[in-house]
Image (cartoon, rainbow, N blue to C red; front, side, top):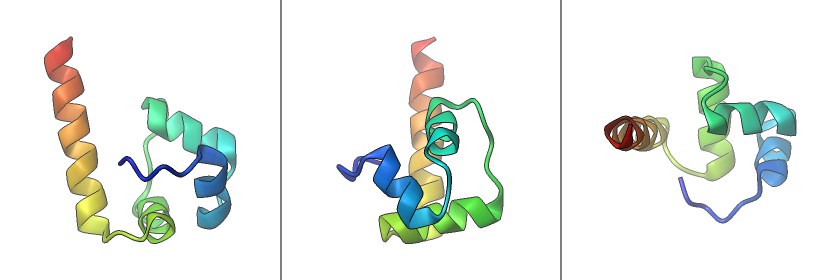
Length: 65
């Protein structure tokens, strides 16, 4: 999701560690529903929209491989 927000700011708004947010973005860590909800609130989007965009991103990166 292109919000223009830094990982550090997103982590702060979601109450997460910046390293954890980086690991999520790189696909190193999977997230729980609670963390997904916190990220959606921090990004000011609905949880379904966040999940939809994450699935689209995963699908497009899988096609590149």
